[in-house]
Length: 305
Image 1 (cartoon, rainbow, N blue to C red):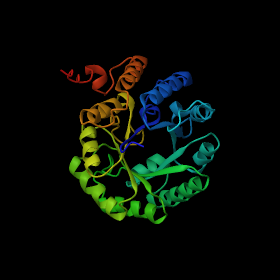
Image 2: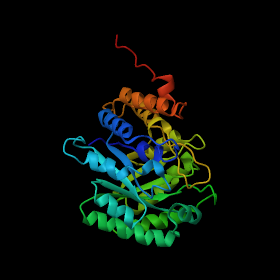
Image 3: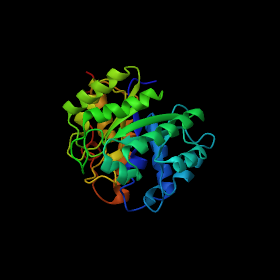
């Protein structure tokens, strides 16, 4: 297994803000291309009410399709986001490999995103995570709005640490800090990941950054130096939480992979395939998207003399 994992979330977090609904067949083609690129995890969708997020109305159908024999390559994990018990039931019924669920560190964002206060969300999410683990599924728990909130501003770091501690006390070891509002700085990232990793150095840590204010890649670099081993990113930089005040795109997958490969990491990933997907996504939506490398092209490697 690679030392650094890439979790492609563009087909959930990337598309959920888009008003132009992508046909299921087009999503399947993009997901299959993501498989060919060599990314380690692919987030297929979220189990939310279709009236609230119409783009996710085909999530069950997509998971059912990719659960058929031979549809998903060995070694690739299909993940899905769930917000409540009903979403978990749906996911258990259609082949989710890893459930992503979380608790916001912002009371305002928590109520807008899930309709629950932090304390209630925490109790219910931990119970859901334990149930999913009991069903033999992988589970990743995140603290959302971990670095700030568009409504509340700064989020106390100790609040984030306290939420992480409840996850660890429940025996949950795959954890993520998510910068839902895009407020993080590299210094914040270094400090907060250092504090939570002190609680459990052997936990598996994931980062999720939004590029709302232009710092997503820099924050990812800081996270890598802080010991984070899994990176959530979105093709072409698509994305944004519809329940935060100022939505911004995710860390761009092909930009992240380009940066890692310039550092001599993850040479196995097929950047050219990621660029093909990004260009096709841009063509579908008929506009320039936030990513850089799909427009500029990668920096050519020197030819050996």
